[in-house]
Length: 225
Ligand SMILES: C[S@@+](CC[C@H](N)C(=O)[O-])C[C@H]1O[C@@H](n2cnc3c(N)ncnc32)[C@H](O)[C@@H]1O
Image 1 (cartoon, rainbow, N blue to C red):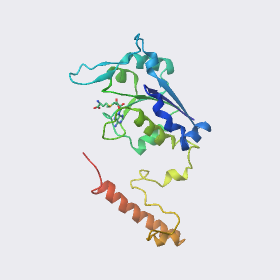
Image 2 (cartoon, rainbow, N blue to C red; image 1 turned 120 degrees about the horizontal axis):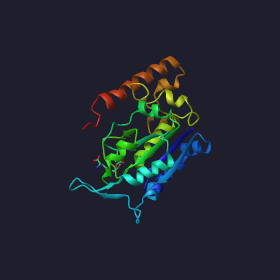
Image 3 (cartoon, rainbow, N blue to C red; image 1 turned 90 degrees about the horizontal axis):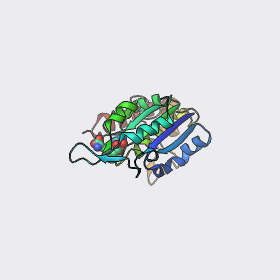
Image 4 (tube, rainbow, N blue to C red; image 1 turned 180 degrees about the vertical axis):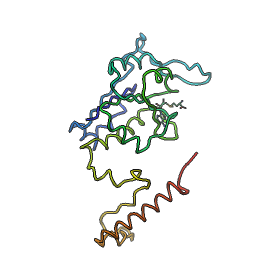
């Protein structure tokens, strides 16, 4: 069982986690997802959680107090692995995803506005993770991306065979997939896939995988900045 606790100001954004495979995994007690609104821990009389940045021109920054007090309440002995989602961090990859699946309890802090006061990140968090080289309005979607990707690796969430032969598991992207009908709008399923010849099918998979990898990772398809 992997227990997720999400610290967010917008718990209503997490409705998508109640569908499909993650909903089944929750029901089967393979994962557990708790949502905590850290605004509830603000000692401000108006429950304020943000203030102006000391950097001129920047917007509102989430303050240390509600975040630190929330952590103290939900994880007093710092047993959980604590992650802050931020674009200013190493970008998530499949190796990191697999590693995170071994934790029993992960706490994710979702930032908003200009971000979070760095002092509470330095004092209270174990790791920072970005989901890509772009900036979103908040950490809620990044948190859902992380939970979805990591939970797939928790035992009993999906068929383990699905995890072996897919993009980013090795150094190549996956070959294209086909299903019935054999012909659709004049486009045919590659003949070899219908042959029943396992060696030939494996050879085709390797070659097709090389083509996709060359196109999108090693070739012109990469959107580098
Ligand atoms: C508008 S962003 C703040 C961006 C910050 N001022 C910067 O330039 O790095 C607000 C929050 O969204 C989340 N966020 C935005 N883009 C993200 C990304 N690519 N990966 C992870 N979290 C992200 C973070 O939690 C961040 O604190």
